[in-house]
Image 1 (tube, rainbow, N blue to C red):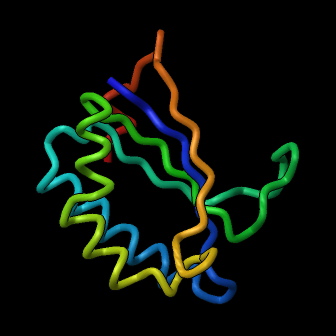
Image 2 (image 1 turned 180 degrees about the vertical axis):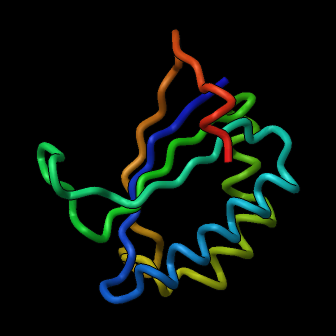
Length: 117
Protein backbone atom coordinates (compact mmCIF):
# COMPACT_ATOMS: atom_id res chain seq x y z
CA UNK A 1 0.00 0.00 0.00
CA UNK A 2 1.10 3.56 -0.67
CA UNK A 3 -0.43 6.60 0.98
CA UNK A 4 -0.30 10.28 0.14
CA UNK A 5 -1.11 13.58 1.82
CA UNK A 6 -1.80 16.23 -0.79
CA UNK A 7 -2.84 19.85 -0.51
CA UNK A 8 -4.58 21.89 -3.20
CA UNK A 9 -5.98 25.39 -2.99
CA UNK A 10 -9.27 26.46 -4.53
CA UNK A 11 -9.62 29.83 -6.22
CA UNK A 12 -10.99 32.50 -3.88
CA UNK A 13 -14.77 32.65 -4.04
CA UNK A 14 -15.02 29.15 -5.57
CA UNK A 15 -15.11 27.05 -2.38
CA UNK A 16 -18.63 25.62 -2.77
CA UNK A 17 -18.16 24.93 -6.47
CA UNK A 18 -14.78 23.27 -5.79
CA UNK A 19 -16.19 21.11 -2.98
CA UNK A 20 -19.10 20.01 -5.19
CA UNK A 21 -16.71 19.10 -8.00
CA UNK A 22 -14.44 17.20 -5.62
CA UNK A 23 -17.37 15.20 -4.24
CA UNK A 24 -18.05 14.15 -7.85
CA UNK A 25 -14.40 13.07 -8.18
CA UNK A 26 -14.67 10.99 -5.00
CA UNK A 27 -17.80 9.25 -6.30
CA UNK A 28 -16.24 8.44 -9.67
CA UNK A 29 -12.98 7.26 -8.09
CA UNK A 30 -14.82 4.96 -5.69
CA UNK A 31 -16.96 3.54 -8.50
CA UNK A 32 -14.27 2.95 -11.14
CA UNK A 33 -10.96 2.53 -9.29
CA UNK A 34 -11.05 -0.49 -6.93
CA UNK A 35 -7.31 -0.19 -6.23
CA UNK A 36 -7.90 3.22 -4.65
CA UNK A 37 -8.34 2.03 -1.07
CA UNK A 38 -8.88 5.38 0.65
CA UNK A 39 -9.75 8.75 -0.84
CA UNK A 40 -10.71 11.31 1.80
CA UNK A 41 -10.97 15.03 1.18
CA UNK A 42 -11.11 17.76 3.78
CA UNK A 43 -11.42 21.52 3.89
CA UNK A 44 -9.12 23.28 6.31
CA UNK A 45 -10.14 24.50 9.74
CA UNK A 46 -8.13 27.62 10.45
CA UNK A 47 -9.13 28.11 14.08
CA UNK A 48 -6.95 26.04 16.38
CA UNK A 49 -4.58 24.86 13.65
CA UNK A 50 -0.87 25.48 14.15
CA UNK A 51 0.34 26.97 11.93
CA UNK A 52 -3.00 28.15 10.59
CA UNK A 53 -3.63 26.93 7.03
CA UNK A 54 -4.92 29.08 4.22
CA UNK A 55 -8.71 29.28 4.25
CA UNK A 56 -8.81 27.97 0.66
CA UNK A 57 -6.81 24.81 1.39
CA UNK A 58 -8.11 21.34 0.43
CA UNK A 59 -6.42 18.34 2.08
CA UNK A 60 -6.42 14.88 0.48
CA UNK A 61 -5.61 11.70 2.39
CA UNK A 62 -5.38 8.81 0.01
CA UNK A 63 -4.18 5.23 -0.13
CA UNK A 64 -3.69 2.89 -3.08
CA UNK A 65 -2.91 -0.80 -3.43
CA UNK A 66 0.57 0.13 -4.69
CA UNK A 67 2.45 2.85 -6.57
CA UNK A 68 1.15 1.56 -9.91
CA UNK A 69 -2.45 1.97 -8.71
CA UNK A 70 -1.67 5.57 -7.72
CA UNK A 71 -0.07 6.27 -11.10
CA UNK A 72 -3.07 4.67 -12.82
CA UNK A 73 -5.37 7.00 -10.87
CA UNK A 74 -3.33 10.10 -11.62
CA UNK A 75 -3.09 9.39 -15.36
CA UNK A 76 -6.37 7.51 -15.80
CA UNK A 77 -9.63 8.64 -17.35
CA UNK A 78 -11.50 9.47 -14.14
CA UNK A 79 -8.97 11.97 -12.82
CA UNK A 80 -7.79 13.41 -16.15
CA UNK A 81 -11.34 14.02 -17.44
CA UNK A 82 -12.35 15.55 -14.11
CA UNK A 83 -9.29 17.80 -14.10
CA UNK A 84 -9.98 18.99 -17.65
CA UNK A 85 -13.47 20.03 -16.54
CA UNK A 86 -12.60 21.62 -13.19
CA UNK A 87 -9.01 22.89 -13.24
CA UNK A 88 -10.24 26.49 -13.34
CA UNK A 89 -11.53 26.10 -9.76
CA UNK A 90 -8.05 25.58 -8.34
CA UNK A 91 -4.78 27.48 -8.00
CA UNK A 92 -2.47 26.74 -10.92
CA UNK A 93 1.18 27.15 -11.82
CA UNK A 94 1.91 27.53 -15.54
CA UNK A 95 -1.54 26.14 -16.38
CA UNK A 96 -1.12 23.03 -14.23
CA UNK A 97 -2.71 22.19 -10.89
CA UNK A 98 -0.56 23.55 -8.06
CA UNK A 99 -0.19 20.94 -5.31
CA UNK A 100 1.99 19.86 -2.46
CA UNK A 101 2.30 16.10 -2.10
CA UNK A 102 3.98 13.81 0.38
CA UNK A 103 4.02 10.03 -0.01
CA UNK A 104 3.92 7.93 3.13
CA UNK A 105 4.40 4.30 4.07
CA UNK A 106 1.86 3.43 6.77
CA UNK A 107 3.41 1.30 9.51
CA UNK A 108 0.46 1.31 11.95
CA UNK A 109 -3.04 2.66 12.36
CA UNK A 110 -6.67 1.95 11.56
CA UNK A 111 -9.86 3.44 10.17
CA UNK A 112 -12.97 2.59 12.16
CA UNK A 113 -16.05 1.62 10.13
CA UNK A 114 -17.86 4.61 11.67
CA UNK A 115 -15.43 6.90 9.82
CA UNK A 116 -16.54 5.63 6.42
CA UNK A 117 -19.17 7.72 4.78
